[in-house]
Image 1 (tube, rainbow, N blue to C red):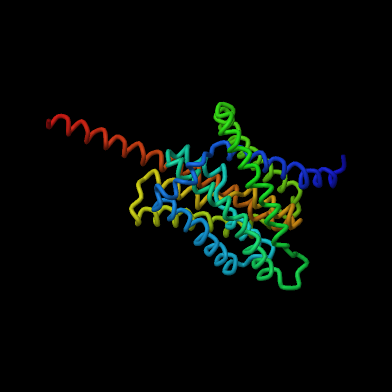
Image 2 (cartoon, one colour; image 1 turned 120 degrees about the vertical axis):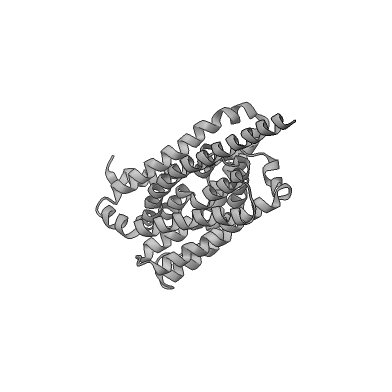
Length: 307
């Protein structure tokens, strides 16, 4: 098979199919109560969603305008900030001993909202960065349908599996999470190979903005939740949710909906950055959690001695 045929196969079949499976896997972690948790814990969910759906795109848009980026790379920044959450953030929240239920809830709600917000904001971004007469046009209704098919539909199927075959769903969760990370790694390697002629240029051009975006959004998630009185587990979840984007969905939109490899380079480079920072944060938050637990145990022992 020639290289062009392989690339076409990956873009048109492999990426959509794998993304469908990943989103279905995420659905298998969800139950109806995950959506009701907004009413049960409104403060934590509201803070997280405000960061994800409002402040994150604002920060991304500001950086895309301030940093010296090619228009395609700037659009790549917007693709990232419009696709918050995902199985990756849920996995790293678990590893960092954060509030996984909160993380899953934010991911679930954001997945529904962004089906409608992505096409509108992305269409504006294309006009802003690429120009009104650009060849890149985004039919809003068609894009909403595509996002529904690739996100809401598989999530709904996964929830049905969770409802009627809970053992299958529970046994598949770890496999799906690992598959999501593995496939995202494959995507980065694939894009690096296809774009090998410009990979160094892309790394130099998008590396700084990726690092700034990642650090600023993680700081936003952590300090906003800290200042508003959330506990350590909740702060951990919101930090991971705001700082770890759904790069797989971003790359899917760049390659499939927009058919532009250059726009996919920012999400690819960002993936490398977020894996590095997330790995560091896992150690930091785990250490904080262990110290907190040790302190609680010591206080409990002291209280028992005083009785």
